[in-house]
Length: 140
Image (cartoon, rainbow, N blue to C red):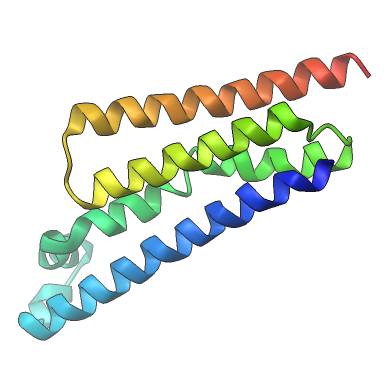
């Protein structure tokens, strides 16, 4: 059933919103702990310096709009061509799980080698989805 691809997609959207909430809460707490001055927002570099203590959620949120964009582009194609088969759904869930793990490690300032390994795994899973889609499309 092709609609099974919707659930990992909803889960990935939920992850984006969760990271956004973490970012919002950490920034509000930082602002309360260390009220900004006009100089803190004089330019983009000053703002980056001001928010440096709570930069990881922002970095991770930006990261969720890089490779995952290819996932969000693929899902409508899978649905349109009725190619969201069980393998694609399983790969989608694995991709989302890897992205959740990456976000957790990234925001928690976990070990960079582990974060990188999880990132590469998520990219490989996404590549497998695109390769599978292309092969299936060529075979239709």
